[in-house]
Length: 511
Image 1 (cartoon, rainbow, N blue to C red):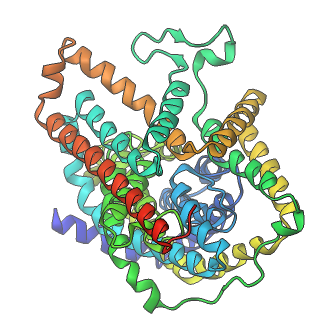
Image 2 (cartoon, rainbow, N blue to C red):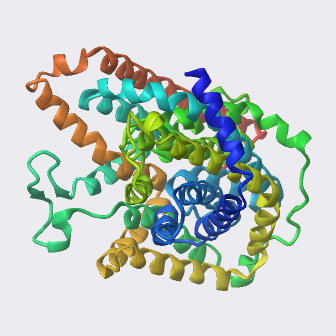
């Protein structure tokens, strides 16, 4: 296995000497960054537009092109989250929380630099893990049935504790709203429509992207429009520091980056989970182990580093089940898998023996993206950072318009646009009364797999809860999830009490 891993890395480097591969990787970086920055777009739209282009390419540059787009979108998603506080994808929620707080303090350059450094370093660290994991996971994952998958979703749900904010009950209530929305549509076992209220569009359920963008993006846009009564005050801070802070400053984030890279690659490698779950777990872990947890939510560079490294490393992790098992590691990987099949590849356990060039092209795409982002990622980020100095009377309505257009372009559905706006209004009032829109959004994403694996697992065990929960891997993972909930809740309570004491003593501003 070690020999095959070293061979894959060597062949990946060798492919980077091919001018066509380098050109396609560069094109993928540019296109991915554009789609990642634009509100309402993302890896789904970026890959959906790019897949037809690959039909005219040779297999190796086509694969490298698609892999590059996924990574570049993941990097660029954090830029508007930092500059405008608007996450273009669920995994960027924490970047919006921490990065935008720094931007409002005039430290946008520091936030962007940590975003860039975490993405590049996290992606680079994930490549060896990807190469090592793809072979053993193809055999291990066959022992993970519905009960084990349910336990993994419980582990992801347990990480919601870090999203609840200071009021845990309100946080879990917000997550319940997300669950309720996810239950609309066909039953995962019987396929019978439920909660459709005789509305034809609801019989197939609600699309995740409009719901999540409504909660997380549109609600923030509405709040941004209503928060300040003088539009002149909406212009970005003129004193923002855009100078590169230096690697000496960035080096302090290596610990959360390293941990986030491991979490991101491992979680991304689990079919059904994605960058969102990786980001939630990594951020939660960083907050629980930080020496300054009170800074989280107010502009913590540890929060940015842990989140960005995890979600970027998960891109390599998601390729593990996609290539090693033929199972899409995320929604966007469905498009990648389809493109591979059209190219004549058959991803699966026999990948390394039958189509090793597919593995080499993937490694080349990951390595090439790191190279290009290292060279142009910071200048691109600085260019995007200037958006915060533009009059928000232009930026916020334009962001809303582009979000509407982006959602409509996914399925050309007016109904999706209405869902987006309705969830945006609901999310705005949740924000206004202290409920976590992030918890609601993450619950929407994870709820489908959570319910379907629970139902199918119970059928597998003849409806025996004891048999379900005592399966070896299931019991271990459920125990870890319970421990995470207890520990996270206790840590949140301690943090609230600590902040209250500091506020009473005058060492911490109230609110």
